[in-house]
Image 1 (spheres, rainbow, N blue to C red):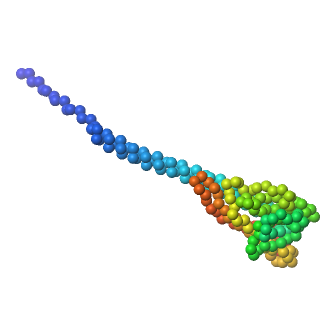
Image 2: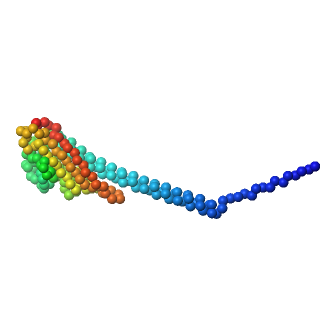
Image 3: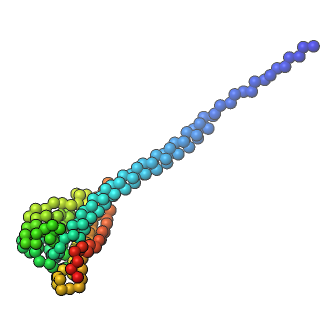
Length: 200
């Protein structure tokens, strides 16, 4: 007896149009959120790098000033950043109370009898400047993106040299803002420098 079995093939079933549309919509939403987060991270990274570059420039300027002041002598502080004749920098002068806008001093290796070799720092407009020839020529220490709004020197212990018992010291205060992509950031930097040469 011959028996034949008939096997019924199951009908193949694919995705419906609605299922495809739902899947594509979910994928598009996830991609939009992901791309938005990625673009936001790229923007934050650029802003952070710009802030780091600006602060590195400012830190380099402050370090340069602190190093020169530390090994210098005869600190002369003025409450104005206006031009002074080189002979004015030759005598010590404090400005501990209200702060000063300009600081001149005899640099290390300088000649105390030579009036035109003093090193001078000041704020000119929105940039910190340095002169190595008692104010005859100036070089900017800060980048154009760094906008200094307040630059003060507080000098103490130089007036009565060497009769006082206070070691000369300079406190530097710098306030300003840095222009970066997407806006600006404010900063306040302060450092204190004590003269290395003992005079107490």
